[in-house]
Image 1 (cartoon, helix red, strand yellow):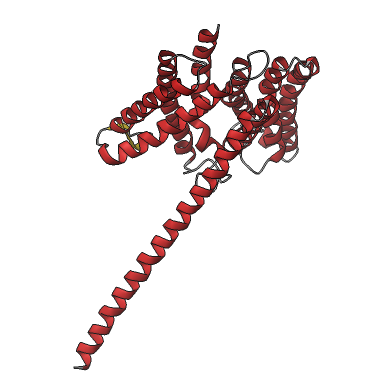
Image 2 (cartoon, rainbow, N blue to C red):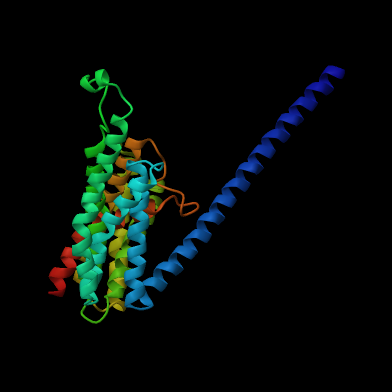
Amino acid sequence: MTILLSQNLDKKMKINNKSLTSINKKNKQMKGLNKRILTAIIFVIVMVSGIYWNKMSFALLFGLITLLALWEFHGLVLGKENMTRRTIASAIGALPVIFATGIVFDQRQWTTLFILLLVPLVFLAFLYELALARNSQAQVTLDQFNNAIAYKPNATAFQNLAYISLGVLYIGMPFAVLIYVLFDGVGFYTNIAMGLLLFTWVNDTGAYFTGSIFGKTPFYPAISPKKTWEGTIGGVLFVLLLAGILSHYFMELELVEWLILGGIVAVFGSLGDLVESMLKRGLHIKDSGTLLPGHGGILDRFDAFIFMLPFACLYIWIVMS
């Protein structure tokens, strides 16, 4: 009898433990969901306000995003411990945005600042790596110096410089192109900028939900195992549907032009998502940062947007010309 009672108590305790675990898991999921929703609301308010407030807020918004993305990117590829190198790299990466902003606002001092800072800042990166090589050389013996295998002074110097150059091309230039192309001489084509953002978000969300329900065929398993062809196609269809809606409210482009632009964003945005996944997989990390609670980092939110910008802006420039 005592044994039976003990067994029943053990069963009840196991059931209660499972229930508590399940409740804790659900609470944790709810907290995570609430965090994601709150971050998304604040994010949307900031983006919409920055785009539509005035032309200065437009430039400042995308300039800030550029700096945050560069800071995050260089923290990943150059390391977070060396703040000096990271600061120099981010400053160099932001120069194209300064140049583009100076042009559209007809501020000669801004464009002059870009020209005057470009070469010194780039050379400063070289000088910094050279200084590190000198410091490391002072700590080795002559025998070690003569042994190329045992001693490689600042062996990653040119690799670091390559990453700095990549930041200019991968992040700085796309945002500079956005600011330059979307300026109409008086203000910015704010509705087109908002359309690009909406296309990117809808493509990502549509692909996620479509893939979750219908996804069976892997799209690129080596880089992103969860991405499927069904989800990718679903994202494109949602974008094209949104293009039809936008054509009724945003009159800057015709229906066909919105559809083509939406297709460009969906295709190259999806590829941009894969590019950042490749970067994170190579670095063995899940998120690029923690700036946006529940969503990861700036690059996690803008990877697709950044990658599609050169292609979308080229099409916009052709249409507007």
